[in-house]
Length: 171
Ligand code: MG
Image (tube, rainbow, N blue to C red):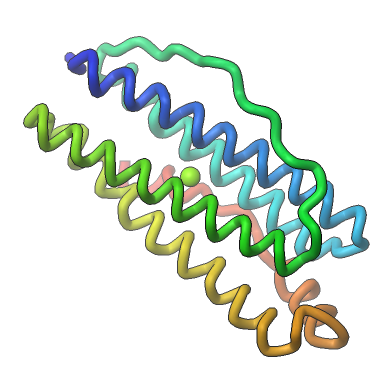
């Protein structure tokens, strides 16, 4: 049985993951408006990944005989300034999510909830990957000043990303 404090924090995390999906869908739409179909594809897959994260918390709460409570999702921006600014916002958002996951780990330690701590370690590793992926894109954007042929090539490259449900493995 989940303790109330952990149940509440995990429910808040579901909201954050769903907000993340909403944010990335909005970034995908913004990318489409710029004619960047490859970046739009990358963002859409990013959104799909966030849904699997929300789902992992959703299933875990039920597995521990807890109660899932879905609350309102905040509105997201619809304009992001430029491709570069948009990816800077992705990195800042992922850093915020990493911080949130770390706080959940702190709670699991405080409550001696080792099952939750074990489940959360998957997210700790996932966040390292998320931040590294976005940093790599930002590094590439810096190389060609986020324009010209370089941007065209990056758009093509990100268009090749396909969805893989990473939460499906190892369960
Ligand atoms: Mg996530």
